[in-house]
Image 1 (cartoon, rainbow over the protein chains, first blue to last red):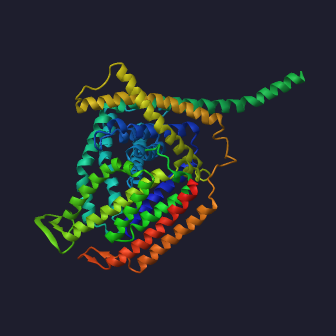
Image 2 (image 1 turned 90 degrees about the horizontal axis):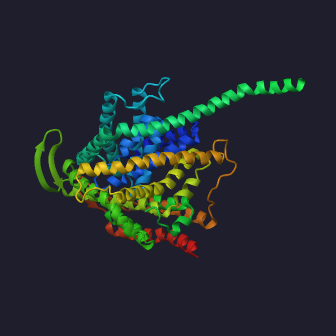
Image 3 (image 1 turned 135 degrees about the vertical axis):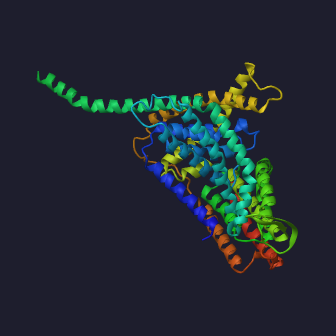
Length: 241
Length: 296
């Protein structure tokens, strides 16, 4: 089996696994709406920065989505953002690889959020990226993903070479993309350092609303299941009286 | 780009996708420039007939930049071929930097193949109705389909919303200077994004409420809308399978054979031309059949 075919089978299997994972999950309508909205926002966010090659806030927004809403939401927001933004910038063989790259960036953001913002009773109320260390860790990983994104994207070119892909092709692709990857990394660094905290506040506000509503619904359901027999018992008592 | 409506969007999306995939997959089978150029021209003519070719050109820009860079860097770093055009210095780890005729031809063929893929993707973009295509999977992947369809709907809405926010900012006298610096442009872009983010997240709450009101999450749906394949579309699907079989047969007979390394050898260019003529004729059959039936 050639390297290209192996890579294609690998990426198809990964997407199939994520799809099964998503379908089997108990994602409610609010989370679905958030994924669709953030995916569309991350895609639209590329438009005002279209004048700068490879500098756009999509990676930063996708990673922040993952950071606040979790790994699953991060991956899906990234994958959707790739498809949608290319409806404006042009679909191509690179779309599938952008879906993978941004999806992984979002999932990584989710993992980072899980590690840095440890879950506790005050998770929902505690401000995110509140300390300098947390903010700059996030910013540095955003910048790093500028390069990682480009390195994953280079694979589509190598795959497109089919059976003729060799180390020369590999090296050539990575050398020629270096300037673009650096622009992407610098852009991510700028966006994240300037806006990570304020955008995290907006995301967290919505996340809080989402969690609070869900918890209140769960609590209401729990209360009703406890109180129902009492009410029924009360009715019975009244009738008996 | 998303608002383009073509007659192909009325055809069953599975059939159109099969047609496009046949072209993309077969482009990987052969190395002959005649067949690759022929395939590219065929796809370009198809796009032109449907009035979409001029729309491809703006989107080619970035692709061509990358292709140009790969075209220059690829041959420089590989060390294959025997017909030297230029011999450069020895570089540690990489070896000798050189340029051979074989490497240049190989890079050109790779870029031709990329263009075929690009045109194929453009055809998918304009000739497949995304909603109808996604509905095919509504039964097996309902969550994914509803999320994707919602996001597709939201994209033009949010693009319009961004435009609206920009105009509101302008009427209030907030716009970048005539020659904005990099920092000013970034700041202005982010200034526009913040209200967009807030309003869209509020909007998503309303969407979620609408979904809930329509019974989402209360169990599996009892009815799924799907696009039925008409009889003539089924026949065309068989024809497409036949075309793929014919291509494989021709490939097995060494049509499209072209050796790049170690030295350029074009085994039978006349045979390739004849095979291309046959292929062009059979490629046209589904287009004529489906195109005619759907414009009656």
